[in-house]
Amino acid sequence: MTLVVSEDSVHAPEREIARDLAVRSLLVAPLMVAFGAIFWGWAGVWSSGYGLAIVSLNFLLGAAIITWSVKISPAVMFGAVMVGFIARLGIIAGAVLPIRSAVWFEIAPFAIALLVTHLGLLVWETRHVAASLAFPGLKPGSAVLSAGSAADTTLERP
Image (cartoon, rainbow, N blue to C red; front, side, top):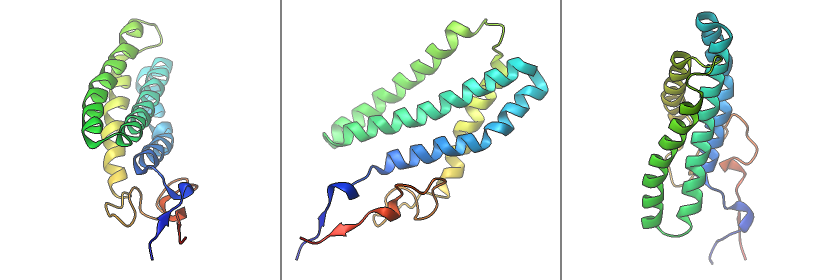
């Protein structure tokens, strides 16, 4: 008697975690934007928001790279993650360099939003990652948006 995992039950835990991180970034966005507004005015609001958007896109892009490469082989995944990390750092630099002298952009609130939310969200998310083979990805019921969470997967018998 063998268990077969149906197509519908296969999910990518890295994508689930990245999606949860992006949603959690929306929860901290008002705090970061308010901080930028208090100290830098409208430029701080726009710069903090820009930093938060880059953080969310960075997490989602990292998960997309893993999801794509894991289907090929572990060696390809390793290479894709390493090259992807460097490429995503380049994308962040490329997103900042053209606008660094714009009137609406302040580097301090942008950098604070970028660094604090990257590190803070990762620390916050560690409390919600299952780290077990039974529930790869998030712990059951710990996702901010529970649709499509690990608890929804089922095994079918042929």
